[in-house]
Picture 1 (spheres, rainbow, N blue to C red):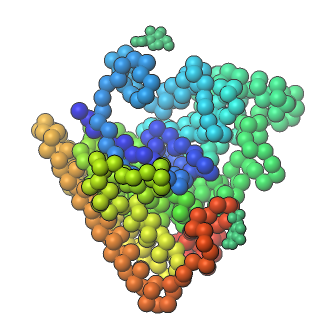
Picture 2 (cartoon, rainbow, N blue to C red):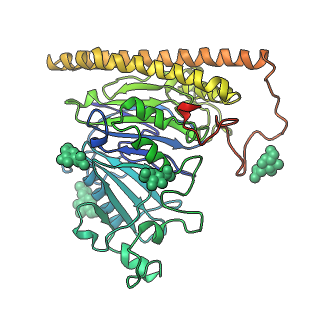
Picture 3 (cartoon, protein in one colour):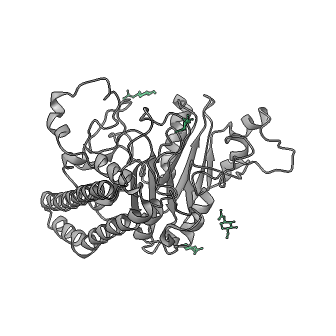
Length: 435
Ligand SMILES: *[C@@H]1O[C@H](CO)[C@@H](O)[C@H](O)[C@H]1NC(C)=O
Ligand SMILES: *[C@@H]1O[C@H](CO)[C@@H](O)[C@H](O)[C@H]1NC(C)=O
Ligand SMILES: *[C@@H]1O[C@H](CO)[C@@H](O)[C@H](O)[C@H]1NC(C)=O
Ligand SMILES: *[C@@H]1O[C@H](CO)[C@@H](O)[C@H](O)[C@H]1NC(C)=O
C-alpha cells in the first residue's frame, strides 16, 4: 500500500480552500525557478487546529460518496488541467454548496490553474491557466480579463453560462467598451475591492507577486521566505507549506515542506510521501478542535493527547516572539532558516540518493523506513527547538519586566480588531529582510 501524506491543511496539491477570510496560495512557473520546477506554497487562514495524518492509498468503488480516489474504472488526473475538468464536471452534475464561493489553485509539474467557483447555486465557475512564466499569488484567488469565446481557448475554462449569466444580471455589457472581466462581473464589489491590489494585510497580491518576481530564479529557500513574510504570516496562518512540483521518479520521494503553524513561528519540516508514521506530537490534539470546549476526551486518544502538540508549541513561539518582534523575530527566523538549511542539505546530499538506491534494489520497505526515520528525526528536532525557544522567551519576558497581565476579561477577539502579528513597531513597507 502506498501511504499518502494527507494533511489537514495540506491542500496545496489539490487546491487551497479559502475559509472564513482567505488563505494565501503561491505559484511560481517553472521558467522562473532555479530548479526549473513549478513551486507551490501557501498558508491556511483558519482558527482551527491543524495536524498531520497519514491516509494509506486504497481503491474505492465507483460512485463512492464519502472518500475520493482512484477506482478500477476511473483514471486519476495526471495533470492540473484534468483536475479543473473534474471540478467543472462535478459542479455541472451535482451543483456546488459554499459559504460564499471558493477559489482553488491546482498545479502539476508543467502549469497551474486558478479555479474559481461562485456562490449562488447557478453552477458558475471560471478557470485560468498559469503558464511557466507566471507568478501568481491568491488571497483569495482572482481571475481578471477573460475571453468570451473561452471554449476555444487552451488557457481558460468555465461553466457554459459564465458570460450569459453576467450579461443577464447586467454585470457585463457585451456591447460596451470593457472586455469581459471575471472579477468585475463576479468578484466582491465596492470601491476598495480590486482583483490584485485590494490591499489585504500589509501586502496586496500584486505586491507579493512582485516580491516573488524579484527573487527569480526562485529557490525553495527563497520561496519559504516569501511564505513566512511577517507582512502576511501571522496568528491567522494555520500552517505553512512549500512544495516543488516535479516527477521524482517514485511517488515516495515527493517532498512536502510543512510548518506546524504559520511559518513565521514554525520551521518547515521535510515530510516525504513515503513516510509511514507521523509522531504523535504532530498528530491531532484538542487544541482549537471542533467541539473540544463542550466534550471530554475519548479514551482512545488519551495517550496522543498526553503528548506535546507541535501546533501549540509553535503558537506559543508566535505569541512570545511577537511581544517584542524587533528583538526576537530576526533571531527566531535565523534559527528556523538554519534548521531548514540543515534539512535541505541532508535531502540533497544523502536522503534522496539513499532512498533511490534502496528503491532500485527493490527494497521499498527499507526505503520507507529510512524516509520515516529522517522525517521523524527532523520533526522531533524542530520540536526540541520550539521547546527551547518557548522556555527561553518565557524566561526573558518575565525577567526583563516585559510581562503583561491582560487588562480585559475577554480572551477571544470577537470583532475586526487586529490579531497577533509581528509587525508592532516595524515598518511594514520595508521588506522583512531589511528590518
Ligand atoms: C519557458 O520554458 C520553455 C521550455 O520549458 C520554453 O520553451 C519557453 O520559451 C520559456 N519561455 C520563456 C519566456 O522563457
Ligand atoms: C454510478 O452512477 C451513474 C449515474 O450517476 C450510473 O450510471 C452508474 O451505473 C453508477 N455506477 C455504479 C457502479 O453504481
Ligand atoms: C508590480 O510591478 C509592476 C511592474 O514593475 C508595477 O507596475 C506595479 O506597480 C507593481 N505593483 C506593486 C503593488 O508593487
Ligand atoms: C476592539 O478592542 C477594543 C479594546 O480592546 C474594544 O473596546 C472594542 O470593542 C474592540 N472592537 C471590536 C470590534 O471587537
